[in-house]
Length: 129
Image 1: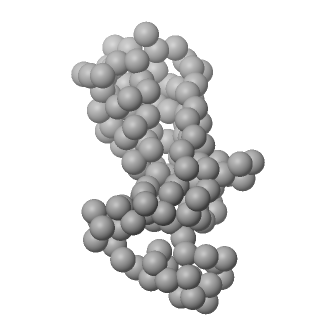
Image 2: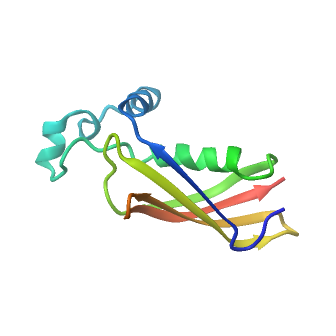
């Protein structure tokens, strides 16, 4: 069912509604995410999106895009390279880099881009139950 070097891709628009709902669910109202003037004082062009919104996209990838549903995330590591701004389109590109069928372990390389700019990268480990 899974093949080494198999890849997946999906793009989302990071809307103001998504950011507002995430802020309320996480109870994270840091002014870096809510106050343009505050964010600009620290070198950003506008308020920045919560980095952990990317975890929502990883959850979608594992739960909805993978061909098996008996899977769980066992670890994830994301390195943030650039800020994310409201209304950007973010593309997740994932590639199956290691596969251990005996243990049911899948290791994905993940990259998040905004257009041609890489904003985050990392690794996602998934267990097939």
